[in-house]
Image (cartoon, rainbow, N blue to C red; front, side, top):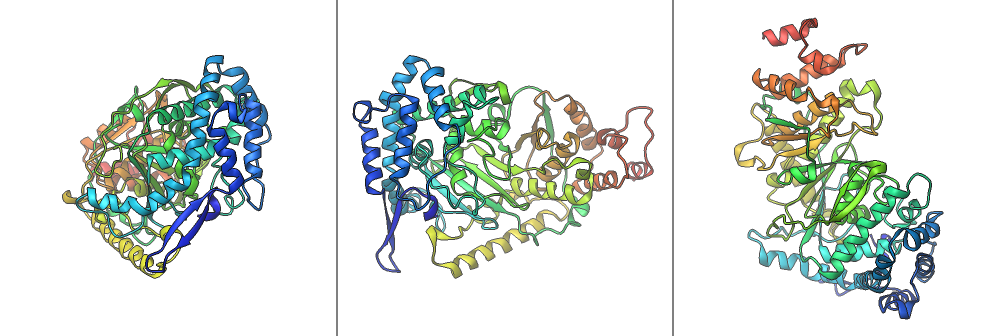
Length: 543
C-alpha cells in the first residue's frame, strides 16, 4: 500500500508494539502550505495557474517516476475555471475552497496516524459487541482477500483532496489492477470533444462536496468490504434443487434507487474496476452515483478489480448533491442534505453493493455458464455475509504486512463458516429466520445498458439471487425502459404459481438450450394467448 500513497510511512517500536508515522516530502509539504495560505501567498487564481501548481508539486514529490497527467489537463482546467464557472464561483474557489483543499491534503499524515492509533480502540469503547481483533485500517484489498477497510469521513476528504491535486503516484496502479485515482482525466475531459457538459457537471458535484466538507466536516465513518464467495462453497447443481421461495418483487416505472431505495441494499451497476469511468469520461449509473456520493471514490484507491466470485459493499457514503439527466445530459442541480441515520460505527445506513455484469455477452449470455456467472455474482453481492460471521469479515494483509499465518487461519475459518451457511441456505428453505437480512434489494437494469445484457434474463437472475440470499423483497427500478413492462406481470404469475428458486432456474436452463432464440424469454415462460408452449413448459406447469 505504501507505493500507492503520496506520503512516506516509517515503522517505529518493537515487533510486539509497532506503530507507524507518516510524512510529506519536505519541499512538497512547503508547496502545500503555500497553497493553503491562500491566493496572496500562492498566486494561484486561475485554471492555468492551478495546473502549473499541480505540476510543480508533482516534481517535488520525490517519486522515482513522474506522475502522468492526461494530455489536455491544462486546457480542461483553464476552460473550466476561466470560462465555464461564474466569476463569483471562481473567486470563492480560489480564495476559500482551494486553500482548504490544500489543508485537507496537508492533514493526510496526521489523519492516517490517528486512524492507525485510535480507530479500533474507539470502536471497541463505543460498540457492544466490540469489533473483532482484526485490522480495519487502510490497506490494499487484493483479489480473493475478503476484508474490510473502515475510514473516517475526514480521512476520506483528505484522500480526495490529494486526488483533486493529482498527488497520488501512478506507477504501480496498473500492475495492481487499480483504476485511476487522480482527477487529471476528469479535468481533461472538460476540454475534450464530446465530454464538455457531463464532465463539467461532474466537477461541479465534486467542488460542491469540497465546499460542504470544508465548511462543516462530517464526523462519521465509511466502510469498504470486499466480499468473496468461496469457489467451493456452492455447487452449481444446488441452484436446480433449491426449494427457497421466490421473494416479492415490485417493478417501479418512476423513481430511482438512491431516492426510493433508501432502506435497501442499493445495487451499483459496476465496472470490474470499482468506479468505472467516474474520474474519466463515464457518466452512467455507477459514475453518477460516485459523483453525488463522492466518498465512494476513496474505494478506487485500494480496491483492485473484482473477480467473478467477488463484490464490493460500501456502507456510510454520504450524499451531497442532486442531479438530473444521464450520460451526456447529466447535470448538477444543487445541494442535498443526507438525513440517513448512522449506526453504532458512525456509518450512515446507506448500503451500496457493487457487482459487475458480463460485458457485451451477446446470445451467449443465455447459455448455462454465463448465466451461472451472473447468478453467482449477484448472489455474492446480495448475501448478508456479516450476519454469518459475527458482524464483520476478517481482514487480510493487516496494515501492510505481518501476521500472515494467523490472518490466513482466520480467513480460512471464516470462509468455512460462510461455505456452511451457504449450503444450509441453499437446502430447501433458503436462509434461516435468525440469519435473514432485514433489508431488501433496490436494483434495476443491471448490465443492460452499454454492457449489452438482456433485461428479461438479468432481471430474473437478480431475483433468483436475492431470493436464495434470503432477502425479503426486491424493488426493481425500470427507468422507464419499455422492455421492463412485462416483468411485473411475469413475476406476479410466477409467484401465484408458487415456483421456487430451483424451478425458475431450471426453466432458464431449458430456455438456454435452444439453438436459436426466436421467442423472447418472458413469452417463453408465460406465453401470450395464441403462442404455442414447448413440451418442457407444459410438463413444468402440469407438474
